[in-house]
Amino acid sequence: MTPTHHHGDRLLVRRTRTVRRGQVVVALRPRSPAVWREDRHSPLIVKRVAAVPGEPVPPGSVPPLAEGRDGRVPPGRVVLLGDNTAASVDSRQLGFFPLGDVLGVVTRSLPRPEGGHRG
Image (tube, rainbow, N blue to C red; front, side):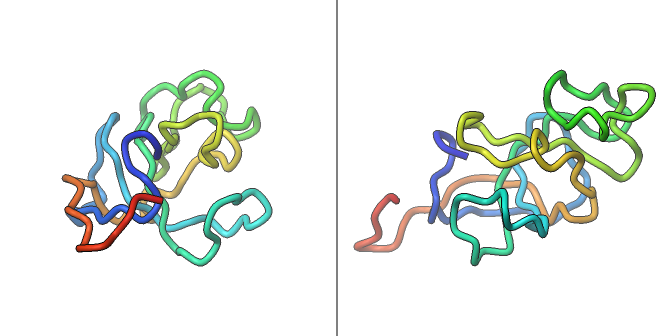
């Protein structure tokens, strides 16, 4: 999520599965290890909601087979994109994310502990 958030940032998250376009969320990492370049040990990812159920699929944001017949996000799914499109693994590679895998909405960054550094 660089430049908005960086690997190792501490985030305050409000648990919810009700999300809106534009919000930054924490979600469970899909089980597609071949596409991940970053830390493979974390079960969580931080991404921005690009579209929610019923909204039009943003152009180029999901693989063509996942777009569906009417070009809208299907019920129970969301489109998640990283802010750094050149380096992000997101709906562009993985398709729709299950809404049930969204754990909450990021409300703010927390200060790093003494001696912590930005990675």
